[in-house]
Image: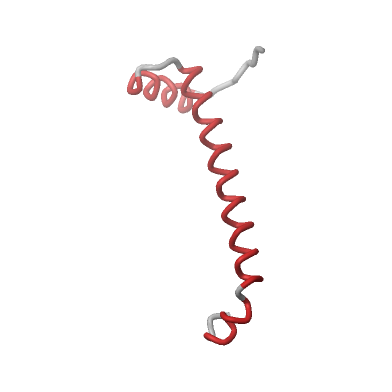
Length: 68
């Protein structure tokens, strides 16, 4: 699959610097960034879902403790 990515001077310099620093291609820098962002978003969603579920499950206890 092919993709054209338009960059400005700032992004181009950042990509070049990261690629050199990590010893990988600019394409790999972008690939890793997208996959890391997806993993972070999925984790954030899971934490939010778990928090909501626990707040419902423990609402009575939290009310008695005065934390809600």
